[in-house]
Image (cartoon, rainbow, N blue to C red):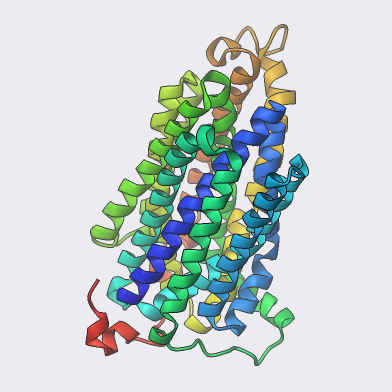
Length: 440
Protein backbone atom coordinates (compact mmCIF):
# COMPACT_ATOMS: atom_id res chain seq x y z
CA UNK A 1 0.00 0.00 0.00
CA UNK A 2 3.01 2.35 0.18
CA UNK A 3 2.84 3.32 -3.50
CA UNK A 4 -0.90 3.92 -3.24
CA UNK A 5 -0.45 5.95 -0.05
CA UNK A 6 2.13 8.27 -1.64
CA UNK A 7 -0.05 9.00 -4.65
CA UNK A 8 -3.17 9.21 -2.51
CA UNK A 9 -1.61 11.79 -0.16
CA UNK A 10 -0.68 14.05 -3.07
CA UNK A 11 -4.17 13.83 -4.54
CA UNK A 12 -5.70 14.58 -1.12
CA UNK A 13 -3.58 17.71 -0.77
CA UNK A 14 -4.48 18.89 -4.26
CA UNK A 15 -8.15 18.40 -3.42
CA UNK A 16 -7.79 20.86 -0.54
CA UNK A 17 -6.46 23.47 -2.95
CA UNK A 18 -9.15 22.69 -5.52
CA UNK A 19 -11.92 23.04 -2.97
CA UNK A 20 -10.51 26.35 -1.75
CA UNK A 21 -10.51 27.62 -5.33
CA UNK A 22 -14.03 26.35 -6.00
CA UNK A 23 -15.21 27.89 -2.74
CA UNK A 24 -13.53 31.22 -3.41
CA UNK A 25 -14.64 31.50 -7.03
CA UNK A 26 -18.22 30.58 -6.11
CA UNK A 27 -18.33 33.22 -3.37
CA UNK A 28 -16.77 35.79 -5.69
CA UNK A 29 -19.30 35.16 -8.47
CA UNK A 30 -22.32 35.12 -6.16
CA UNK A 31 -21.28 38.31 -4.33
CA UNK A 32 -20.61 40.03 -7.66
CA UNK A 33 -23.94 39.05 -9.21
CA UNK A 34 -26.31 38.07 -6.38
CA UNK A 35 -27.84 35.55 -8.79
CA UNK A 36 -28.49 31.86 -8.15
CA UNK A 37 -28.53 31.35 -11.93
CA UNK A 38 -25.04 32.83 -12.28
CA UNK A 39 -23.77 30.58 -9.51
CA UNK A 40 -25.25 27.41 -10.98
CA UNK A 41 -23.94 28.36 -14.43
CA UNK A 42 -20.44 28.46 -12.95
CA UNK A 43 -20.95 24.97 -11.54
CA UNK A 44 -22.21 23.85 -14.96
CA UNK A 45 -19.08 25.23 -16.64
CA UNK A 46 -16.96 23.21 -14.23
CA UNK A 47 -18.86 19.99 -14.88
CA UNK A 48 -20.26 19.66 -18.40
CA UNK A 49 -17.00 19.77 -20.43
CA UNK A 50 -15.40 17.02 -18.36
CA UNK A 51 -18.44 14.77 -18.68
CA UNK A 52 -18.64 15.27 -22.44
CA UNK A 53 -14.94 14.48 -22.85
CA UNK A 54 -14.88 11.45 -20.54
CA UNK A 55 -15.14 8.81 -23.32
CA UNK A 56 -12.20 10.39 -25.15
CA UNK A 57 -10.25 10.63 -21.89
CA UNK A 58 -10.96 6.97 -21.08
CA UNK A 59 -9.82 5.81 -24.50
CA UNK A 60 -6.61 7.83 -24.17
CA UNK A 61 -5.96 6.56 -20.64
CA UNK A 62 -6.04 2.96 -21.89
CA UNK A 63 -3.50 3.89 -24.59
CA UNK A 64 -1.20 5.90 -22.32
CA UNK A 65 0.81 4.98 -19.26
CA UNK A 66 -1.65 5.79 -16.48
CA UNK A 67 1.06 7.30 -14.29
CA UNK A 68 1.89 9.92 -16.91
CA UNK A 69 -1.77 10.56 -17.61
CA UNK A 70 -2.21 11.54 -13.96
CA UNK A 71 0.82 13.83 -14.07
CA UNK A 72 -0.44 15.58 -17.21
CA UNK A 73 -3.84 16.04 -15.57
CA UNK A 74 -2.40 17.50 -12.35
CA UNK A 75 0.00 19.78 -14.24
CA UNK A 76 -2.81 21.11 -16.42
CA UNK A 77 -5.00 21.63 -13.38
CA UNK A 78 -2.23 23.77 -11.86
CA UNK A 79 -1.90 25.86 -15.03
CA UNK A 80 -5.54 27.03 -15.00
CA UNK A 81 -5.50 28.77 -11.58
CA UNK A 82 -2.00 30.11 -12.33
CA UNK A 83 -3.39 31.96 -15.35
CA UNK A 84 -6.20 33.34 -13.18
CA UNK A 85 -3.66 34.57 -10.60
CA UNK A 86 -1.76 36.45 -13.30
CA UNK A 87 -4.96 38.04 -14.63
CA UNK A 88 -6.13 39.00 -11.16
CA UNK A 89 -2.75 40.40 -10.11
CA UNK A 90 -2.54 42.54 -13.25
CA UNK A 91 -6.10 43.80 -12.93
CA UNK A 92 -7.32 42.11 -16.10
CA UNK A 93 -9.57 39.44 -14.56
CA UNK A 94 -13.17 39.51 -15.78
CA UNK A 95 -16.10 37.41 -14.68
CA UNK A 96 -16.08 35.33 -17.85
CA UNK A 97 -12.46 34.36 -17.18
CA UNK A 98 -13.63 32.40 -14.13
CA UNK A 99 -16.03 30.41 -16.28
CA UNK A 100 -13.14 29.59 -18.63
CA UNK A 101 -11.07 28.54 -15.59
CA UNK A 102 -13.86 26.18 -14.54
CA UNK A 103 -13.98 24.67 -18.04
CA UNK A 104 -10.21 24.04 -18.12
CA UNK A 105 -10.22 22.36 -14.71
CA UNK A 106 -13.14 20.18 -15.79
CA UNK A 107 -11.25 19.03 -18.90
CA UNK A 108 -8.11 18.00 -16.99
CA UNK A 109 -10.13 16.23 -14.29
CA UNK A 110 -11.74 14.16 -17.05
CA UNK A 111 -8.34 12.55 -17.58
CA UNK A 112 -7.38 12.25 -13.92
CA UNK A 113 -10.37 10.26 -12.68
CA UNK A 114 -10.31 7.25 -15.08
CA UNK A 115 -6.50 7.15 -14.87
CA UNK A 116 -6.49 6.93 -11.07
CA UNK A 117 -9.45 4.54 -10.94
CA UNK A 118 -7.76 2.16 -13.38
CA UNK A 119 -4.39 2.49 -11.63
CA UNK A 120 -5.69 1.44 -8.20
CA UNK A 121 -6.22 -2.28 -9.06
CA UNK A 122 -2.64 -2.36 -10.40
CA UNK A 123 -1.02 -1.17 -7.17
CA UNK A 124 -3.14 -2.86 -4.48
CA UNK A 125 -4.21 -6.47 -3.92
CA UNK A 126 -7.77 -7.77 -4.20
CA UNK A 127 -8.20 -7.77 -0.43
CA UNK A 128 -6.95 -4.17 -0.27
CA UNK A 129 -9.26 -2.91 -3.01
CA UNK A 130 -12.17 -1.92 -0.76
CA UNK A 131 -9.78 -0.28 1.71
CA UNK A 132 -8.14 1.73 -1.09
CA UNK A 133 -11.51 2.92 -2.43
CA UNK A 134 -12.49 3.90 1.09
CA UNK A 135 -9.30 5.93 1.43
CA UNK A 136 -10.05 7.70 -1.83
CA UNK A 137 -13.32 8.77 -0.25
CA UNK A 138 -11.39 9.95 2.81
CA UNK A 139 -9.12 12.05 0.56
CA UNK A 140 -12.10 13.62 -1.17
CA UNK A 141 -13.79 14.38 2.13
CA UNK A 142 -10.71 15.68 3.93
CA UNK A 143 -9.87 17.81 0.91
CA UNK A 144 -13.39 19.22 0.86
CA UNK A 145 -13.54 19.84 4.63
CA UNK A 146 -10.12 21.44 4.73
CA UNK A 147 -10.82 23.43 1.59
CA UNK A 148 -14.15 24.73 2.87
CA UNK A 149 -12.78 25.69 6.30
CA UNK A 150 -9.63 27.25 4.92
CA UNK A 151 -11.53 28.90 2.08
CA UNK A 152 -14.02 30.47 4.48
CA UNK A 153 -11.27 31.60 6.84
CA UNK A 154 -8.75 32.79 4.25
CA UNK A 155 -11.03 34.39 1.65
CA UNK A 156 -11.51 37.59 3.72
CA UNK A 157 -7.73 37.71 4.37
CA UNK A 158 -6.08 36.54 1.14
CA UNK A 159 -8.88 37.15 -1.31
CA UNK A 160 -9.36 35.15 -4.47
CA UNK A 161 -5.74 35.53 -5.60
CA UNK A 162 -4.45 33.93 -2.39
CA UNK A 163 -6.73 30.91 -2.72
CA UNK A 164 -5.73 30.43 -6.35
CA UNK A 165 -2.05 30.55 -5.41
CA UNK A 166 -2.50 27.84 -2.80
CA UNK A 167 -4.24 25.71 -5.43
CA UNK A 168 -1.25 26.01 -7.77
CA UNK A 169 1.13 24.89 -5.00
CA UNK A 170 -0.96 21.85 -4.03
CA UNK A 171 -1.29 20.65 -7.63
CA UNK A 172 2.48 20.95 -8.02
CA UNK A 173 2.97 18.71 -4.99
CA UNK A 174 0.50 16.19 -6.46
CA UNK A 175 2.57 16.00 -9.64
CA UNK A 176 5.72 15.37 -7.61
CA UNK A 177 4.15 12.51 -5.62
CA UNK A 178 3.20 10.70 -8.82
CA UNK A 179 6.66 11.37 -10.24
CA UNK A 180 8.32 9.87 -7.14
CA UNK A 181 6.42 6.60 -7.57
CA UNK A 182 7.04 6.10 -11.29
CA UNK A 183 9.89 3.65 -10.65
CA UNK A 184 7.79 1.69 -8.16
CA UNK A 185 4.96 0.99 -10.61
CA UNK A 186 5.35 -1.16 -13.73
CA UNK A 187 4.32 0.74 -16.87
CA UNK A 188 0.81 0.12 -18.12
CA UNK A 189 0.78 -1.92 -21.35
CA UNK A 190 -0.33 0.37 -24.14
CA UNK A 191 -3.58 -0.63 -25.85
CA UNK A 192 -2.78 0.42 -29.39
CA UNK A 193 -4.53 -2.35 -31.30
CA UNK A 194 -7.52 -0.12 -31.92
CA UNK A 195 -7.92 3.54 -32.79
CA UNK A 196 -9.04 6.11 -30.25
CA UNK A 197 -12.41 6.28 -32.03
CA UNK A 198 -12.86 2.52 -31.77
CA UNK A 199 -11.90 2.75 -28.11
CA UNK A 200 -14.75 5.20 -27.56
CA UNK A 201 -17.32 2.56 -28.47
CA UNK A 202 -15.70 -0.39 -26.66
CA UNK A 203 -16.54 0.94 -23.21
CA UNK A 204 -20.15 1.50 -24.26
CA UNK A 205 -20.49 -1.98 -25.80
CA UNK A 206 -19.09 -3.62 -22.67
CA UNK A 207 -21.65 -1.89 -20.43
CA UNK A 208 -24.58 -2.23 -22.82
CA UNK A 209 -24.07 -6.00 -23.03
CA UNK A 210 -24.51 -6.29 -19.25
CA UNK A 211 -28.06 -5.25 -18.38
CA UNK A 212 -27.43 -5.16 -14.65
CA UNK A 213 -24.56 -2.68 -14.92
CA UNK A 214 -26.41 -0.62 -17.52
CA UNK A 215 -29.52 -0.45 -15.35
CA UNK A 216 -27.43 0.59 -12.36
CA UNK A 217 -26.02 3.46 -14.40
CA UNK A 218 -29.49 4.63 -15.42
CA UNK A 219 -30.50 4.56 -11.76
CA UNK A 220 -27.56 6.76 -10.81
CA UNK A 221 -28.28 9.15 -13.69
CA UNK A 222 -31.84 9.73 -12.44
CA UNK A 223 -30.80 9.75 -8.79
CA UNK A 224 -27.98 12.22 -9.45
CA UNK A 225 -30.36 14.66 -11.12
CA UNK A 226 -32.41 14.91 -7.93
CA UNK A 227 -29.41 14.99 -5.60
CA UNK A 228 -27.44 17.56 -7.60
CA UNK A 229 -30.48 19.80 -7.91
CA UNK A 230 -30.44 19.95 -4.13
CA UNK A 231 -26.69 20.21 -3.60
CA UNK A 232 -26.14 22.98 -6.15
CA UNK A 233 -28.89 25.09 -4.52
CA UNK A 234 -27.53 24.76 -0.98
CA UNK A 235 -24.96 27.60 -1.42
CA UNK A 236 -27.52 30.18 -2.70
CA UNK A 237 -29.93 29.10 0.05
CA UNK A 238 -27.37 29.45 2.84
CA UNK A 239 -25.89 32.67 1.44
CA UNK A 240 -29.40 34.14 1.33
CA UNK A 241 -30.04 33.21 4.97
CA UNK A 242 -26.55 33.76 6.43
CA UNK A 243 -22.98 34.98 5.81
CA UNK A 244 -20.19 33.41 3.72
CA UNK A 245 -18.56 32.28 6.97
CA UNK A 246 -21.66 30.28 7.88
CA UNK A 247 -21.70 28.81 4.39
CA UNK A 248 -18.11 27.66 4.94
CA UNK A 249 -19.19 25.89 8.13
CA UNK A 250 -22.08 24.20 6.32
CA UNK A 251 -19.72 22.95 3.62
CA UNK A 252 -17.16 21.78 6.17
CA UNK A 253 -19.72 19.89 8.26
CA UNK A 254 -21.14 18.26 5.14
CA UNK A 255 -17.74 17.07 3.97
CA UNK A 256 -16.90 15.99 7.51
CA UNK A 257 -19.78 13.54 7.07
CA UNK A 258 -18.04 12.15 4.01
CA UNK A 259 -14.73 11.97 5.87
CA UNK A 260 -16.25 10.02 8.74
CA UNK A 261 -18.17 7.75 6.40
CA UNK A 262 -15.06 7.09 4.32
CA UNK A 263 -13.01 6.20 7.39
CA UNK A 264 -15.70 3.75 8.47
CA UNK A 265 -15.86 2.21 4.98
CA UNK A 266 -12.08 1.81 4.76
CA UNK A 267 -11.94 0.14 8.18
CA UNK A 268 -15.10 -1.98 7.98
CA UNK A 269 -15.67 -5.26 6.19
CA UNK A 270 -16.71 -4.98 2.57
CA UNK A 271 -20.54 -5.15 2.29
CA UNK A 272 -21.69 -8.50 0.92
CA UNK A 273 -24.82 -7.02 -0.68
CA UNK A 274 -23.59 -3.93 -2.46
CA UNK A 275 -26.78 -3.04 -4.36
CA UNK A 276 -28.85 -3.35 -1.18
CA UNK A 277 -26.39 -1.01 0.53
CA UNK A 278 -26.83 1.52 -2.27
CA UNK A 279 -30.62 1.35 -1.90
CA UNK A 280 -30.57 1.87 1.87
CA UNK A 281 -28.35 4.92 1.53
CA UNK A 282 -30.59 6.23 -1.25
CA UNK A 283 -33.66 6.03 0.98
CA UNK A 284 -31.84 7.92 3.72
CA UNK A 285 -30.92 10.61 1.19
CA UNK A 286 -34.56 11.03 0.16
CA UNK A 287 -35.67 11.49 3.77
CA UNK A 288 -32.93 14.07 4.43
CA UNK A 289 -33.85 16.08 1.32
CA UNK A 290 -37.50 16.03 2.39
CA UNK A 291 -36.55 17.40 5.82
CA UNK A 292 -34.43 20.14 4.23
CA UNK A 293 -37.34 21.20 2.04
CA UNK A 294 -39.85 21.23 4.86
CA UNK A 295 -37.75 23.34 7.22
CA UNK A 296 -35.06 25.08 5.07
CA UNK A 297 -33.29 26.04 8.28
CA UNK A 298 -29.54 26.56 8.03
CA UNK A 299 -28.94 24.01 10.77
CA UNK A 300 -31.24 21.41 9.23
CA UNK A 301 -29.49 21.96 5.90
CA UNK A 302 -26.16 21.49 7.68
CA UNK A 303 -27.30 18.21 9.23
CA UNK A 304 -28.76 17.13 5.89
CA UNK A 305 -25.49 17.78 4.06
CA UNK A 306 -23.62 15.81 6.73
CA UNK A 307 -25.86 12.80 6.10
CA UNK A 308 -25.98 13.20 2.32
CA UNK A 309 -22.21 13.40 1.83
CA UNK A 310 -21.64 10.72 4.45
CA UNK A 311 -23.92 8.47 2.45
CA UNK A 312 -22.06 9.32 -0.74
CA UNK A 313 -18.85 8.03 0.81
CA UNK A 314 -20.49 4.62 1.22
CA UNK A 315 -22.06 4.60 -2.25
CA UNK A 316 -18.86 5.73 -3.99
CA UNK A 317 -16.66 3.09 -2.34
CA UNK A 318 -19.15 0.26 -2.83
CA UNK A 319 -19.82 1.17 -6.46
CA UNK A 320 -16.13 1.55 -7.31
CA UNK A 321 -15.32 -1.87 -5.87
CA UNK A 322 -18.24 -3.45 -7.73
CA UNK A 323 -17.11 -2.07 -11.09
CA UNK A 324 -13.44 -2.87 -10.53
CA UNK A 325 -14.37 -6.50 -9.85
CA UNK A 326 -16.60 -6.81 -12.91
CA UNK A 327 -14.36 -5.08 -15.48
CA UNK A 328 -11.15 -6.44 -17.10
CA UNK A 329 -8.10 -4.34 -16.27
CA UNK A 330 -7.18 -3.67 -19.90
CA UNK A 331 -10.48 -1.86 -20.65
CA UNK A 332 -11.10 -0.18 -17.30
CA UNK A 333 -10.13 3.29 -18.55
CA UNK A 334 -12.73 3.19 -21.32
CA UNK A 335 -15.42 1.47 -19.27
CA UNK A 336 -14.98 3.70 -16.22
CA UNK A 337 -15.07 6.82 -18.38
CA UNK A 338 -18.33 5.77 -20.04
CA UNK A 339 -19.67 4.71 -16.66
CA UNK A 340 -19.05 8.14 -15.18
CA UNK A 341 -20.35 9.93 -18.27
CA UNK A 342 -23.68 8.09 -18.11
CA UNK A 343 -24.15 8.26 -14.35
CA UNK A 344 -23.15 11.93 -14.27
CA UNK A 345 -24.89 12.91 -17.50
CA UNK A 346 -27.85 14.32 -15.59
CA UNK A 347 -25.70 16.60 -13.42
CA UNK A 348 -25.17 19.32 -16.06
CA UNK A 349 -28.93 19.35 -16.67
CA UNK A 350 -29.51 19.71 -12.94
CA UNK A 351 -27.00 22.56 -12.75
CA UNK A 352 -28.47 24.24 -15.82
CA UNK A 353 -32.06 23.89 -14.63
CA UNK A 354 -31.81 24.29 -10.86
CA UNK A 355 -31.00 27.98 -10.67
CA UNK A 356 -33.42 28.91 -13.45
CA UNK A 357 -36.23 26.82 -11.99
CA UNK A 358 -35.66 28.24 -8.52
CA UNK A 359 -35.53 31.85 -9.69
CA UNK A 360 -38.14 31.94 -12.45
CA UNK A 361 -40.54 29.06 -11.76
CA UNK A 362 -40.56 27.86 -8.15
CA UNK A 363 -40.18 31.28 -6.51
CA UNK A 364 -43.16 32.86 -8.33
CA UNK A 365 -45.27 29.78 -7.49
CA UNK A 366 -44.94 30.32 -3.73
CA UNK A 367 -44.61 34.13 -3.61
CA UNK A 368 -47.32 36.80 -3.48
CA UNK A 369 -50.32 35.70 -5.53
CA UNK A 370 -48.59 32.58 -6.83
CA UNK A 371 -50.85 29.51 -7.27
CA UNK A 372 -49.08 27.63 -4.45
CA UNK A 373 -48.58 30.57 -2.09
CA UNK A 374 -51.63 29.75 0.03
CA UNK A 375 -50.93 26.01 0.29
CA UNK A 376 -47.41 24.73 -0.23
CA UNK A 377 -46.07 28.24 0.32
CA UNK A 378 -47.14 28.05 3.95
CA UNK A 379 -44.60 25.26 4.40
CA UNK A 380 -41.81 26.45 2.13
CA UNK A 381 -42.10 30.17 2.76
CA UNK A 382 -41.86 32.74 -0.02
CA UNK A 383 -39.14 34.47 -2.00
CA UNK A 384 -36.03 32.72 -3.27
CA UNK A 385 -35.79 30.65 -0.08
CA UNK A 386 -39.31 29.33 -0.65
CA UNK A 387 -38.59 28.55 -4.28
CA UNK A 388 -35.48 26.56 -3.38
CA UNK A 389 -37.39 24.70 -0.66
CA UNK A 390 -40.09 23.77 -3.19
CA UNK A 391 -37.46 22.26 -5.48
CA UNK A 392 -36.10 20.29 -2.53
CA UNK A 393 -39.52 18.73 -1.99
CA UNK A 394 -39.85 17.87 -5.69
CA UNK A 395 -36.38 16.28 -5.62
CA UNK A 396 -37.35 14.13 -2.63
CA UNK A 397 -40.26 12.70 -4.61
CA UNK A 398 -37.93 11.96 -7.55
CA UNK A 399 -35.42 10.20 -5.30
CA UNK A 400 -38.08 7.94 -3.82
CA UNK A 401 -39.27 7.08 -7.32
CA UNK A 402 -35.77 6.03 -8.45
CA UNK A 403 -35.47 3.69 -5.46
CA UNK A 404 -38.75 2.02 -6.42
CA UNK A 405 -37.66 1.56 -10.04
CA UNK A 406 -34.35 0.04 -8.92
CA UNK A 407 -36.16 -2.50 -6.76
CA UNK A 408 -38.45 -3.46 -9.66
CA UNK A 409 -35.48 -4.40 -11.90
CA UNK A 410 -34.21 -7.91 -10.94
CA UNK A 411 -31.26 -7.64 -13.34
CA UNK A 412 -30.00 -4.65 -11.38
CA UNK A 413 -30.86 -5.99 -7.92
CA UNK A 414 -28.96 -9.22 -8.62
CA UNK A 415 -26.03 -7.84 -10.63
CA UNK A 416 -23.51 -8.97 -7.99
CA UNK A 417 -24.48 -12.62 -8.34
CA UNK A 418 -25.47 -12.65 -12.02
CA UNK A 419 -22.10 -11.29 -13.18
CA UNK A 420 -18.97 -13.16 -12.08
CA UNK A 421 -15.95 -11.37 -10.63
CA UNK A 422 -13.22 -11.17 -13.26
CA UNK A 423 -9.70 -12.33 -12.44
CA UNK A 424 -7.36 -9.40 -11.82
CA UNK A 425 -4.73 -9.49 -14.58
CA UNK A 426 -1.91 -8.58 -12.16
CA UNK A 427 -2.76 -10.44 -8.93
CA UNK A 428 0.52 -9.39 -7.37
CA UNK A 429 1.27 -5.71 -7.05
CA UNK A 430 4.60 -4.00 -6.66
CA UNK A 431 4.07 -3.94 -2.91
CA UNK A 432 3.48 -7.70 -2.86
CA UNK A 433 6.68 -8.46 -4.73
CA UNK A 434 8.88 -6.04 -2.80
CA UNK A 435 8.67 -6.50 1.02
CA UNK A 436 10.33 -3.13 1.48
CA UNK A 437 7.24 -1.46 0.02
CA UNK A 438 4.63 -3.19 2.17
CA UNK A 439 4.65 -0.72 5.05
CA UNK A 440 2.00 1.95 5.10
